[in-house]
Amino acid sequence: MSGPKLNRVVKDFTADATGDKKVRLKDLRGRNVVLYFYPKDSTPGCTQEGLDFKADAAKFKRANTVIFGVSRDSLASHEKFKAKQGFPFDLLSDPDEELCRYFDVIKEKSLYGRKFMGVERSTFLIDADGKLREEWRKVKVKGHVDAVLESAKALKS
Image 1 (cartoon, rainbow, N blue to C red):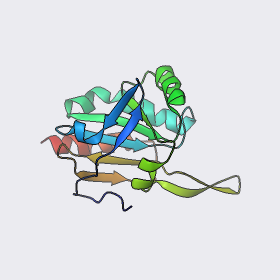
Image 2 (spheres, helix red, strand yellow; image 1 turned 120 degrees about the vertical axis):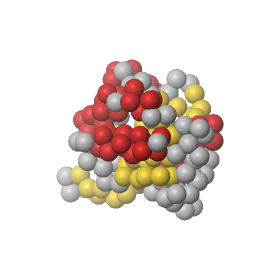
Image 3 (tube, rainbow, N blue to C red; image 1 turned 90 degrees about the vertical axis):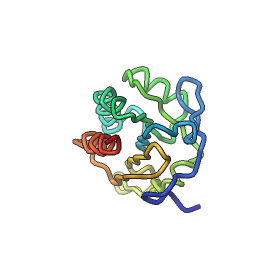
């Protein structure tokens, strides 16, 4: 399966989300969508990234943009993470890696000399018509949310 291409409509998907919801991309038409993929709930970088999105959540809302964090963690793990950090947005659970593979974020990583397959921190901005407008790969957390917000605001105008 080939992944989404810039300036092309992203194929529809449905994912389980916190709050006992199902999120369907097609149902979000009319709003911009940020999908930020992160490796693991409750780890330092992932927590900071979520907190950065939380800090600017109202600005994203004014830019007609909804935010979703995505990882392979379970819904139970997501619920705890979201509650503990007070995230005002939902987290999508992708334990079968369907979304992760479609967006091509599963990459070989190395930790303490051990190689494994994991989620490469990546963000995707989909416009109100369902087209992929921006993608950020190998994301460094510091300053990242500002860049995503600027792009979301640019879509609004």
